[in-house]
Length: 232
Image 1 (cartoon, rainbow, N blue to C red):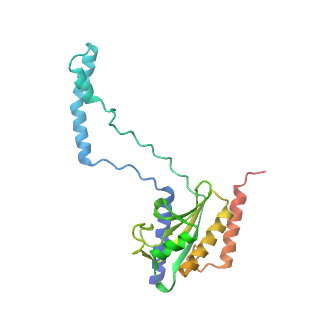
Image 2 (cartoon, one colour):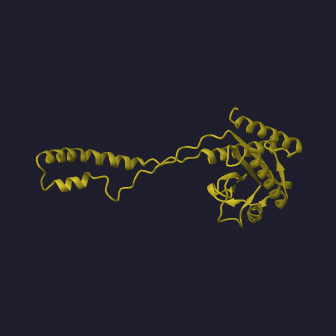
Image 3 (cartoon, helix red, strand yellow):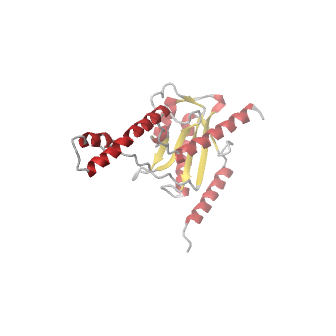
């Protein structure tokens, strides 16, 4: 295996990881540090007899110490932070369609040129620090553009210094548009950006994007749409 093949294998693996994180990444709440957990255990151990005393005082009609005990035990005051409601995880997509734009002759694409090409092609910078094409009415994501250079996203504060070997265009199905409509939009945008950046358009196998491969993808998406229709 030559160095070029090995490099593309690493790039493809990185892109798949990026897409998976974009689709399924629901960061979990950070665990409390060990020292914090130990302090909380000691606190609970100290409070257990206080809870017993509070119950005893309440049964006896209360007393002057009841107010202080209640203040110590009250964990739901106005300063208590409510539990954060995490959104339900997104269901896995039925299908992911990918294209690549690669800088020619081992050159690199500058961040300024990339930003200009993306905006001229109707994409917006947004969620996950990557570019998206969104619907005009609801703002739902139709397809996205990520960085082929690690870590996969773009630093919006460093366009002047950013350089990349290329980008990946990807869409997930089902989406806000029909499969063929979304594909036509992504392909047209990919070709426009490739033209502006003087980059090569590659298919999902990192090969030159040909009319034959374009026809194959269209047939795959046509079959996908057919299977999505309710049975007559």
